[in-house]
Length: 251
Image 1 (cartoon, rainbow, N blue to C red):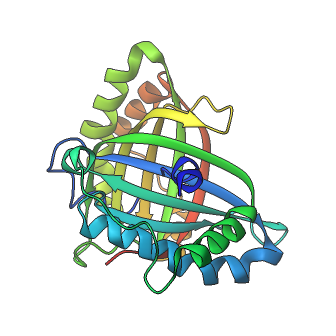
Image 2 (cartoon, rainbow, N blue to C red):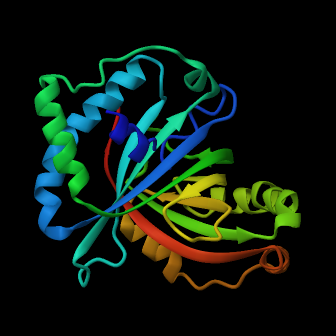
Image 3 (cartoon, rainbow, N blue to C red):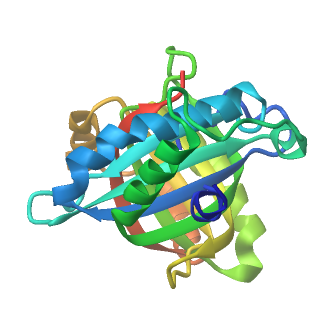
């Protein structure tokens, strides 16, 4: 279990949980060969059982599994994103759980663990803190079906200005333009990749069609929006914009 805890100490139902102190989120990316996908997904039910144990014990607030869908057809690999949410109360908890999935003995679990971890060819982990966002959903805690994770490199000396612009200027704009939800997070640490990312924004949509329709719309921006974009462009650089599809989550 120690090996697994190190590798997977791992956006999205953030909004319902942000009241209990600072919400922190672990985002763990794992890339596997497409030939391993069927077996990998079949074994995930055992790992979900572990996260369910931890949630019921108060050690975490929620867990989600996403799949990177761009690029797709031409790729021989698949990247999964595992997301775990922790309130301040979760982080302080000293509760104990068995650490073995329901229905398995320790020996079988160790075999499943080794097999699943052997699938991963590349890993990347980052911890972030939730800075703010909104949720237009009426489906309680169910995450959106699609998410766009935007990686930002923000000027170190302008981080407060950047957060202020995102939350006071762009969050209201995003709330009105059809997104199901939106979130701003700040990177606390990273492992496994040489990235300059220090912030993520996450855009949530009900369908891929909604996402692409919004991108396709080319409307003239009001002067105030143009000025706001020019201002934020002087502070931050967009490094990547990745689309993810929801695979599973804890109810």
